Length: 233
Ligand SMILES: O=c1ccn([C@@H]2O[C@H](COP(=O)(O)O)[C@@H](O)[C@H]2O)c(=O)[nH]1
Image 1: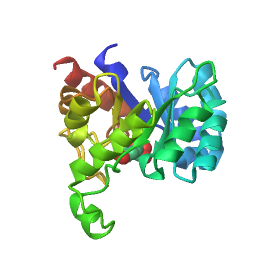
Image 2 (image 1 turned 90 degrees about the horizontal axis):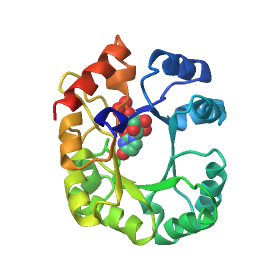
Image 3 (image 1 turned 120 degrees about the vertical axis):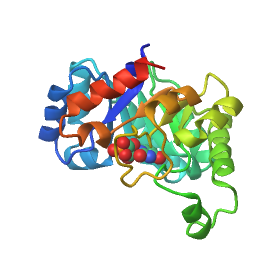
Image 4 (image 1 turned 180 degrees about the vertical axis):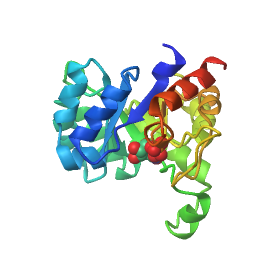
């Protein structure tokens, strides 16, 4: 796998037409993420289109509910033949275990990823608003380990925690990092960021890079620039 194969681009657009326009604009992207905005507006049709175009897909709906509901949602989502699927680690051990169990008899189930601490949150919000008494990095590690112990395949974490998670969770645990920002792009609402090269060097398997590419004046140029930055590492 080349480093550019490690980039997942989110289709964070309001409708199917805009999503297809992005696919057409960036044919070199092999891995796309479908999140809440597009799925809520347009449903699952985009997942079939990605399959037809032989692209890999990441369905990022971040399930967070009681065990029975999370398990049912994971089983339903598996029908779309997606490669990756997210649920919140904070749904708890029983929900994580039930999710894994619900798809265990499928021929090619998606890999389940546990969301740890959203990359938009900072340490102050975690402590003062969410009243989490642990250090942010310790909390993220605990959530990733809860996922691992429950049979989940990997975690979504910030690049700032990925080295620690890699060290503790091992090489086989899939680590996917949003919160990735080239030095030339703005952070937007992301708090805990690193550059693409730093995130890969720290141990990320995949990087989710959205607005620096899709919001650029010339998305193709931005994509190429990021790929070049990654060939030099
Ligand atoms: O902790 C998380 C979990 C998921 N995301 C998602 O990743 C992309 C990031 O997009 P950018 O435009 O590069 O900020 C977006 O779809 C989020 O829903 C995340 O950012 N942080």
